[in-house]
Image (cartoon, rainbow, N blue to C red; front, top):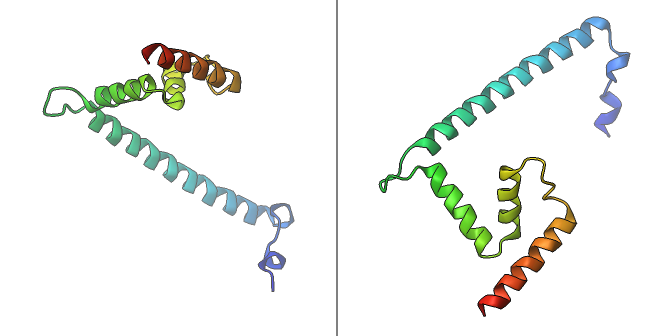
Length: 111
């Protein structure tokens, strides 16, 4: 037997039930936002730490992303372009094709 028969739409519930459901949703939403904010702060703090060679982990990630882009990883290139210019529409398929063509031409020069 389907549990869908047991579901009561929100608009068929009493005002008190609707308020209670909305309150529970608001509390859960606030908790989720606080957890996300806490995780983001911890991650940022860790990324700011310096590795034994004196370079921050955030800088190492940027270097790694640039290296991937230089090796032809189109997603890495698009991600870099998004960070450089937020308005750049790097998810557009035409930009992907254009970037791929440029990379292929660059690789042909190297060979």
